[in-house]
Image 1 (cartoon, rainbow, N blue to C red):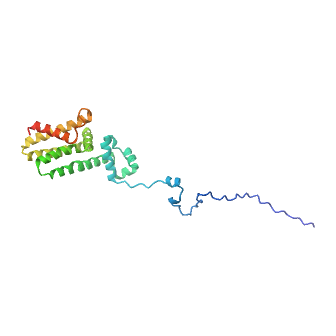
Image 2: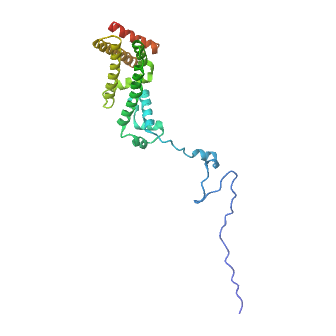
Image 3: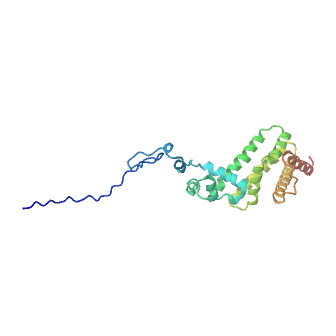
Length: 239
């Protein structure tokens, strides 16, 4: 019998040769490989990795709200624009505050405590009545930011959060001014009228400055404006 030789089946498997890695590129990592540190990544890939955000506090939101109030008024104190300015999500806001009114109340109370209460305490420490009166008038005009915030609050006194704050602030200032005048020798009735007149003049000037900027001379700032208001007050009550 003739021997039959069976030819082996040819191997048709296509083998792709391994291409050496291009210079400067890292080898591909499998799922079990350790992560590559950012310093080992190419510069463009390292830059694309998002930075870790700082955890925002309640104070961060309040401070930003006060700045927005001074810069753009009441409408600027809103969740979305504040979150965008802080680089935060709305979830961060709702972690600290129930709603917009809660933030607004916290911001106004913070400003009242720092710009009104602390300033009145500082003025109370001045023992000489005349010196204290001069310092009080100067304080009213010392910070354009604080004047702007109070004007914003005054214009929005019908707001359920802002209205009570405006009433508290006006009563605090009026009580302090009246007490100062009584210590200077006026009767309670004279002191009350004098304080009301002086505060009305100051508010009127500030409102005019906001509504008609060119009406009040620009050079009437700081001590000049303080002297003008004080002089009107003295003329009105005969001091």
